[in-house]
Length: 262
Length: 320
Ligand SMILES: Cc1cc2nc3c(=O)[nH]c(=O)nc-3n(C[C@H](O)[C@H](O)[C@H](O)COP(=O)(O)OP(=O)(O)OC[C@H]3O[C@@H](n4cnc5c(N)ncnc54)[C@H](O)[C@@H]3O)c2cc1C
Ligand SMILES: Cc1cc2nc3c(=O)[nH]c(=O)nc-3n(C[C@H](O)[C@H](O)[C@H](O)COP(=O)(O)OP(=O)(O)OC[C@H]3O[C@@H](n4cnc5c(N)ncnc54)[C@H](O)[C@@H]3O)c2cc1C
Image 1 (cartoon, rainbow over the protein chains, first blue to last red):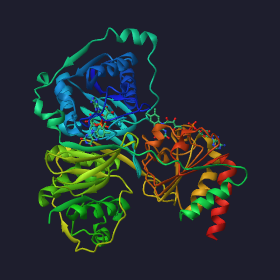
Image 2: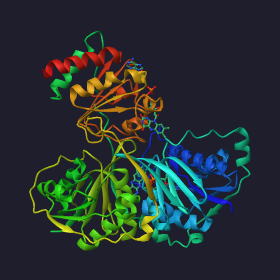
Image 3: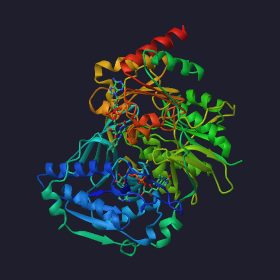
Image 4: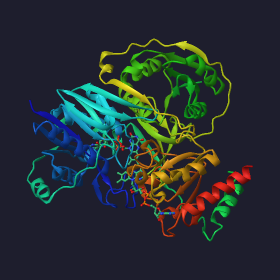
């Protein structure tokens, strides 16, 4: 039985660009280039390694919920080696929050069919880090999250979670939802061959109707949360900068003493 | 007055500081009811009462340690059903966020994570978040269900506010479905004796400029002179010079101390994401063009191997 792996990948505004909010207080996606959230590359990488460890007896579907451009994120993941894509796209999705996203992902994962769902540890825009847990709760399957090591063998997923106070080794039977950290191993670069092959790989497009989701369950109107204000942080007033000419340490101590840190 | 559930983060009953901050914030929107899971409730109760908990709901079960996250969600849900609170507050740790998320699905509520401030509003609590690597400040609220909000450490100064803190046993049944992820082994992290990175009032971090594990004692010596925690950039962590648990940034710890000192760190956006809300920022870097200087209150352009030891000596001398 071939292992069915679904990797959730998010299309996000480039963190090194000048990110903004639009007038309706959602993320302004026109203003900055988007890309596959870098932390999701680690998820794709681990899925590929799990497939390799299964001697290729697995199928990797990459799934995204996002606007038309989010197709770029799928293409990147396909060029790394994933087999096919699913793109959930619908105008009514604009402004969906975490609860809503997890609803859409859960329905799409169920429709696609899965044994293992792999997510990144957090997106690089919302950075909530809760989606894998939300998804596991909705699907009613184990969550094996924030893993720095992951392996699948005989229908069991094992992983290592480096928490705040301890390192834990975890184990769960499939089906399950896992998330992997950027400590799980460098993500591969797509090869030229991979990029060419990705152009021919199938991407299925789904809308809310296909997933039996009503428009008012998602989007800005259906959101469980509301952003009421978004203000750009005022630029810091220029600090004092000194060049060390032998007295730098002393001068810094003087500053710290003035601020009552010493 | 409405009750507010506060999830207690503790180690065998030793309550961690972020929980005391949560109790302080909870008092702005109602009466704090603490939920203490695992051993040590008797020890914890006194501290929780001192900081405003009118009640301490407690439960202990082996499942809390034997399985990941979900059994604790069962317990928090039982507390939620017992109290019908106006809001549920949790610390913004990995576990706090995951527990909050699953509870939110179960009770049909929205969730806000990483709040840095909280106030009462006409339509429920309003949370302040610092987003896009702290380049924006937002105010949000939850529109459906009972607000579930996770709050970052150092978001409020814990205030004493003695309350009854009556301990009540909570009846919890851990569902079979919550025993899906077994914790096969657990190795507690060894304590360095230094303050916890996320809670520390002062953090001293080293980056690629420290140039080797053998040089990190230079950073540690400064930290120790100030009673500070030690942080590191991802470049220093990836090179194997310092443990990942000390990484500051987007994929490491997010810190918000009174004072942050960055030595040999350039100030990449992912590093800034984890430290930009620090109250006072100081950098030592030999490159005058390093982006970190755009953030600083005080910067020294110079060799960290000259400046840091000189500063350490000066701190020690002044402290006597
Ligand atoms: C700055 C900012 C702050 C926000 N704050 C909140 C908030 O407090 N509450 C709230 O409800 N919503 C919030 N949102 C909205 C939220 O980010 C989106 O709803 C998002 O789709 C889910 O959260 P996340 O991206 O933070 O997920 P995370 O939990 O950080 O992402 C973890 C993983 O989930 C998967 N994933 C996440 N989104 C998708 C997707 N669209 N398609 C495929 N896979 C995905 C990826 O594998 C990813 O690595 C915020 C958004 C922004 C930009
Ligand atoms: C998805 C993703 C997540 C990431 N998460 C994180 C994260 O959580 N935390 C993080 O830190 N980074 C993170 N990064 C990496 C980040 O982009 C940078 O690569 C990293 O922060 C650089 O570390 P650095 O400043 O120590 O090194 P560099 O950028 O190489 O800077 C070293 C600095 O040291 C100075 N220097 C050298 N020698 C001396 C000397 N003798 N005295 C004084 N100064 C000296 C140099 O002038 C230079 O400015 C992430 C990247 C990605 C893509």
